[in-house]
Amino acid sequence: MSTSVEIRNPKHEVTTPAGGSARPSGAWMKDLSASLVVFLVALPLCMGIALASGMPPASGLVTGIIGGLVVGFLSGQPLQVSGPAAGLAVIVFEMVREHGVAALGPILMVAGAIQLVAGLLKTGRWFRAISPEVIHGMLAGIGVLIVIQQFHVVLDRTPEHSGPANIKAMWGAIFGGLFPLNGSKEEAAALVGLITIVVMVLWERFRPAKLKLVPSALLGIVTATATAQIFAMSVNRVKVPENLGQMISLPHLSSMQGIGLSTLAGTALALAFIASAETLLSAAAVDQMQTRHKTNYDRELMAQGVGNMLCGFVGSLPMTGVIVRSSANVQAGAETRRSAILHGVWMLMSVVLFASVLRMIPTASLAAVLILVGIKLVKPAEIRKLARFGKIPVLIYFASMITIVSTDLLTGVMVGVGLSLLRLLYTVTHLDARVEEQEGATHVHLSGIGTFLAIPRIAQALDEVKTECEVHIHCVNLRYIDHACIEVIEGWTEQREQNGQQIHIEMEKLHMRYRAPVSETVS
Image 1 (spheres, rainbow, N blue to C red):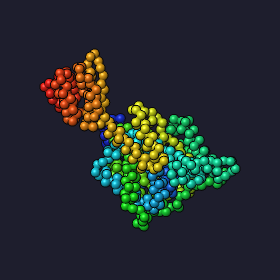
Image 2: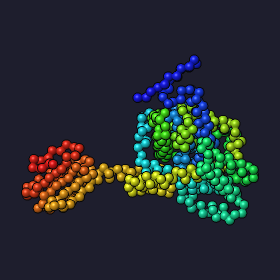
Image 3: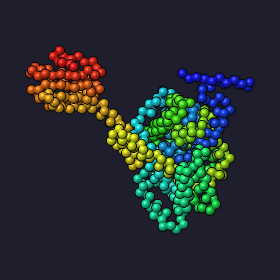
Image 4: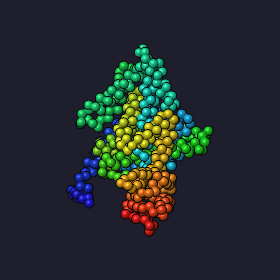
């Protein structure tokens, strides 16, 4: 039972849980400081993910603003921060390439509506019912795609349309642009990216404990931008419109011309599914990081749906709950949803007041940040964890990852889910039957699940039993057996007993109703 502490003073009276903050002003200050940390983490990622999605950097900033001001107010996990996520960059890039930027808005509005309806139908928890090997394989595949795609951007080149094409083009990018060293534009961009990566890695490795909340991405981009400005380096820079109105692109019906209804529905469903899964997994992680707030998954799903409908309406990127920003929010000491909302306010102010500063940032620097993000998505530690449960989870992990890299995100996820279902089907229908001779008696050991699909395996094992010896059939390790298998065992037992053979059936631990024939000995 929780206790509470009552605090009285002449100005106000507050009751708070024991161990919590008793002063509203103290909670406000924590939320304010946490919101600034989250803003500094989110700002470069919003622009970088937009570039990785084949969209203008401004579209990522608009999504970040909506994620803070709207979804932050409605979310089912107050400490979760929403915005553009690397997990959706790949599917958005493919969508924009196939259907154009203008088609993203209507498709995203449909995806948001699907999320909203799913939340209203209280299906939030079911979106988490995806096997871990599929999720980790999906994230690893996304990480690989981001790395090989942003490799070209960090050289101020345009990425190719698919994973295999990007891998193939790497050779030409290295030996046709970067080498031989001759002062080319690719070399200047690569230097900017290298500076960003070096600063980030060194800061994460050696930063003082008192400055642990200062994001490495911000320091890397500031250093690279300052270097590019001081030396007047000829590299591509971020393009940000002069005002907020120019960042908004309202949808038009003409943008959907040539897109079939099945394509629209399929793409929207894929977007909604992946965004919802990533959001709710992030929310579950936030639940584990703190004890102040527990997630209302259905409300979180509805909030994401509203946010994505708004993002589609203004022509910006899709959003999810993002674990990087959410964990930064928790670690910075956020107490309430005010932190997520305020981070959206700072995003808005940066666009309105400091657009000229944002336009100084080299795109190669943002690409370098995303390369490190992509590398972190490929986690060898997860493979070792999955290996504890056998080879099959590892196989599903690599199958999902390789399919995503070689084809597309949706196909990879479906392959992973399909393999997981096949594994489940095998598990719930598999029966092991082992026959061994011990001290003049034959022992038949049955374990697993005994359904009608297991009848051939049971019959084969029983046929191996000799007719002249005593038989013990051990069923105690069966987790389930249906009437079809029981009839097979009973029929075989009756035939053998008519020939004078002794049969003993052991099923005392079996959790089912079973009435043994009178002729049997049940121990």
